[in-house]
Length: 410
Image (cartoon, rainbow, N blue to C red):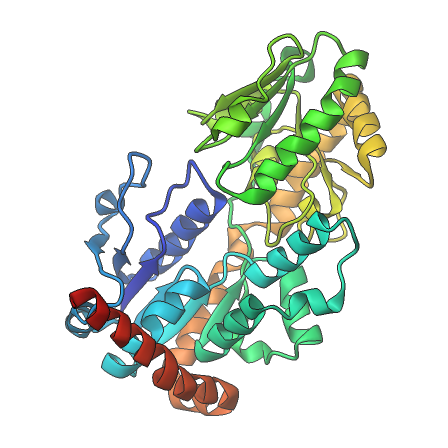
């Protein structure tokens, strides 16, 4: 009998808008390769930029929040596995799946640890260093509870894997590290990269709905005058989906600070620019823009948070700056030094090959899923905290959801 995967998404995947969208398509490809039937559910509306999942032999259905129609639907679908794309989706629908399809394996793709990003944001906006108590927010408690309730949670970052297992003592048996997945860059692809002398200007990219990306643009605005003064012929081209009015107001032709909005082709942008600038002040997970810079032969200058958990013991494909002055200095140096630029490009090729090669992760992931499928009862019995959180959720979240449903009908 064919296994059936039901994915419940907060939004429909937009791989050209967000790294999360690309990540979801990579996970879907792994399950399709293992011959899973796939159904994608979301309560959000599709946009013009939503990926055409129906063309990939994936059934797509719209669902309602806080509505018993979901109970009927999930019973009819009778999934083998359910994958939530954020912990909020598990909160909303997990208890219903436990009630109607108790044998279905529940998997949480964390995307990144939201509580970690929130803690760093708090420290950043208060102009101070991160403190351990910053982690312990309501969001932390919700996200950890969701992780415990699920049979397996996927972590995209080695740093986050270590944080959960070492600092918060989460059992590694309910966690699995699986980063962005790519095939190695071939020599043919490398030979088609435009060379240093044929590339011009700096680039930056990031979805403007994501607050760290907006803060990155503000930091770029602050640093750009010093870079422009040293390299007067250079421009900074800033791309990102869902550009806001406040971002458009930063556009300045005279200064060469150009806010261009959505990139129709990331490949075209990244293969014509000479250096990617990403002074990311806070965040979590892995940064898709930095992986794309490696894929398209574009060296970058970023921060320790930007490069976190990406390079391991390998050399970075550009520079990791320690402060604003260092960032400006490294950006100018990388833009002007062809030998360093070429070596940085090669470093990116090696990072893709040795850190994000799909062949390093696909078998281990499917094996882990199959292991849980074959030993579901033992796996759940060993996760006794998960059973406690499941019980509490069925008493509280279920009551709240049903109250909202009755209120809406009233």
